[in-house]
Length: 109
Image 1 (tube, rainbow, N blue to C red):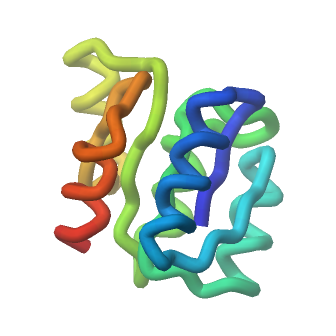
Image 2: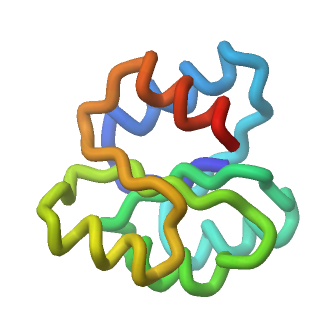
């Protein structure tokens, strides 16, 4: 599953994941991400931090059980990465993310 803001980078990431044989569901805000996750039951969630309604940190806290959470975001400071860990993310990728890095992180899940 992918929850994202209006970023072309996130769209490219979803296409790369789908090309790798992964089934993709997409949400465009925090509340929608929670609803899609409940219906889709994803194994992995690519989650932007800067989501409308609920930020990615709050969505991660609510989704923690059951899915591997990967932050895919433009927010890349050390403090941002620590907040991701504290919220329960398993990985933090800062945009732009190259295809090899995304594939490596997805393969580890």
